[in-house]
Each structure stands twice: as structure tokens, then as C-alpha cells.
Length: 152
Length: 184
Image (cartoon, rainbow over all chains, first blue to last red; front, top):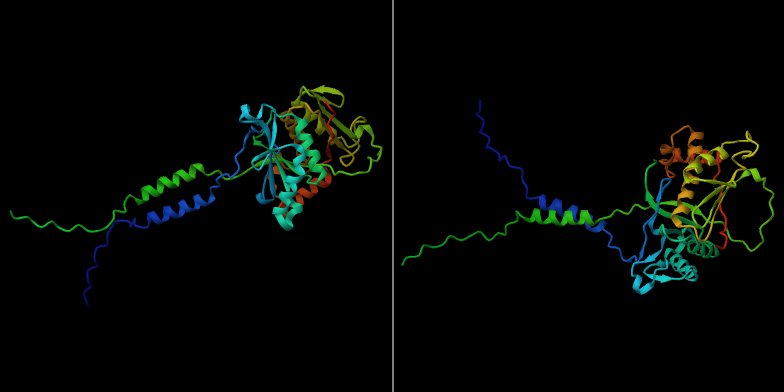
């Protein structure tokens, strides 16, 4: 019988040379997933708590409208203001804003939904004014944003 | 003097700490990433028409009136009420199906009318809207014989779930109207 050649002893160590590559892949994933918020929110919006929530999907058809007290009270006063993109507007500016958002969506323009991010201390008067303007341009799907809490 | 010749070092960069550096960056991005998951109460505003509203005769008992005034006080069916009670009352109203003469004839006739004043705080407005929606969800869940949490977890995109949702909507159509606010 032929004698077997003795096997060479293999190294017991796990090769770690690929570890940085794996970590880098993870790193790139999170770098891409991170959205550096382009629009600075200039109003204080502490959202009300809600239970009967629905997850917002299709992020690209959503347009945010922030309403709340300005952070910079010295400059803009204490009165609640409406912020879209990164400017303050009055309720009269809403139709123009909606039209701009619709143009951005192209052929999905009719699917546009508005997301209200409104401070819980804001008064309904201002919210109603905005809603009236939204009805004027028939942007009728609105979402009242809130923090999800589970049932008491 | 005789100098011993230095041994040449290998010209390789030590890559052992590379993983540590990458880990550090990774943890930084892990922390700063906020995966966007907004939750919201969806609502459809009423359509705007130029025609004056048609005078539809709706029996008063088929309307569940909820009014919030500018000091965040609730008036439900002409009674002062606390926020915690409103869900129960609304469920009673929706599930009545003609039993009680003062409440709705059937879920299809039942209309919940909600009006807030201009001075009402947004928080109160949302809390009440949340409770009214909860009432609808509770009766719908009961109709399907599942728990409220199970009802809320139903997915519109899923075919089997969609069927259930449609069935629930058929039984209890959400006729929740937000009236235009009064001027104070």
C-alpha cells in the first residue's frame, strides 16, 4: 500500500484580512441610508400623541407643511407660523406651494398628499386657514402627523 | 566603527487598525441615521364646490355631534363630556342599528360630525379625532371578529387583508365630517 503523505498542518487562525471590507460595506450602506436633512425646520413642532396611526409610505408623494412657534422668537415673533421647504409663508402662499410640489411629481401629480407637522400648542384657526386653501386647489388628502403611542 | 547593517523593514502599512477605524465610522452613521418612519392620522378634506349646500334632510338622531370650543371643552350630543368617554359614546352610537330611538338607525346612516373652534388647540383637535377614529376601528374590528391591534395591523397592499378591510368598510363606512369652524 502506498503510504499517505502526511498532511501539512493548517493554520488555526481565522483570516481577518477581509474584515475591513465587510465593515466598509456596512459603512457605505449606512452612509447612503442617512439622509442629511436639507430643510431646516425653523418652527418648534412637538407633535401630539396618537394611537390610531397609519404608516406613511411612498415618501416621494408627500409634502410637508410645518406649523408652530418660530424657534427664533426675537426675529420672527411668538405667533405660530407656517413653514414650507425652508421659508415662512402665509396661508395665501399654500396654493403656489402645492402647485410647485405637483410639478415636481410630474405624472403622479394627482397623488400628492400633504403631511401636517403641527405643534400641539398651535391653534386650529391657522390650521383651518391652510386646509381651506388646500381645498381650493383640491389637495384633499392630508395626514396629521403624530407620535405613536400604544393603547392605554 | 563598524556599523551593523540595519535590517530592511518590510514596506507594508499596518492594516490591522483599519477595521477599528471603519467600525468607528460605522457606529457614527448608525447613530445618526434616522430611518424615516412617520406615523400620521390620514384624513380627506371635503370637496370644495361652488354650489350652495343642498339641504339634505338627515334625521337628527343619525348625527353624532362633537364640538370642541376654544377652551378645549367637549360637547357631545349637547352634553358636556370628558375626552376619555367619547370613544365609548361613539361606539354606542355606531353600533346602535336602530335599537335606541335616540341613536343611529344603521351604521350606513350614521354620521359623525366634528367641529372645532378657531381657538381650539391642535392637540385637543387631534386627540378627539384620534378617539373618533378609534371608535370606528373598534367597531370594524368587532365586525371582523379580531382585536383592535390586529385590525390596525392589516395591510392595504396585502390581498387577503384588503378583502377584510373592504368588508369592514362596507359594514361601517367612515362618515366622519369635519365641519368648518366657527369664527372664534
